[in-house]
Amino acid sequence: MIGSRLIQLVVMVLVLSFVTFLLMKITPGDPIRAILKVDDVITTTAEEEKLREEYGFDQPILIQYSRWLLGIVQFDLGESLIANKPVLDMIMGRLPASIALATGGLVVLFLISVPLGVLGAVYEGRWPDYISRWFALVGASIPRFWLGLLLIYFFSLKLNLLPVMGNGTLAHFILPSITLGVAMAPLYIRLLRERLISTLQSSYIEAAKARGLRKERILIFHALRGSLVPLITMFGLSIGSLLGGITVIEILFSWPGMGELIVQGVMQRDYPVIQGYILIVGFLVVITNLIVDLLYLVINPQIKQGKEVV
Image (cartoon, rainbow, N blue to C red; front, side, top):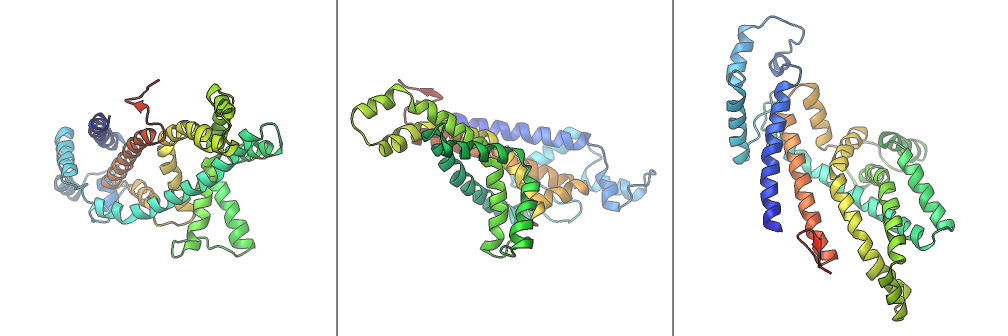
């Protein structure tokens, strides 16, 4: 399974690189005019032609793509048209901050979704279940940026407990992590609750009860373990949404991650930065899905090659 997934990883990166490069070429706008700061000028100047030749924009698309792909193989994503710095260095300088924020959001996500999902299933139809479903409903109705603004208003402006911008201390880490985790939690709460309710009513749980096992052991080692598989599947499918949501939150809290970098790249038509960002994010998504597949074997060793052995 690992070998086939690695082959899929290579194929996905190749396809992603080609689609990314092609999209940059058909996107409206001219990066050369962005460099020269002459967006309103229609006439092509000699300096523009010189820059096009210097950056290779006068070559056929396939030649440009082959050169860029060769650079990728050599871990070279090109140079920023605006900052005149290696794109890989610019991304790697900000990637740790984005990964740290994503990790904090995931911690908050599971600290919220697992207890509320379990309480909703165990106490179905009672007040803990109502609280679980209410939180999931309200959380799903609030946009991420508005949730972040509410947290800033109460905890920073009104109570003066937490800082708003930057990442200097652990306190700077709290609000953006809570915003990211709370925004994603409702989907996982509902999914875990529904799955766990179904699992608790299954025949093998009844058999475990008949053997005299404690309720806590049945819940944790039997019902909850089996119910985590769809949650991991959902996480693999939503990793792209997670990385996209980080961009909004990073800008809102002035977090020095990749969000500000890609926004500046889009605004300035810095195509190498955009291409590098999309490629790195796509690579992270594929790698995360590979890790998710491996986690299946940890949670349920009977799962092999996408089939469950009976």
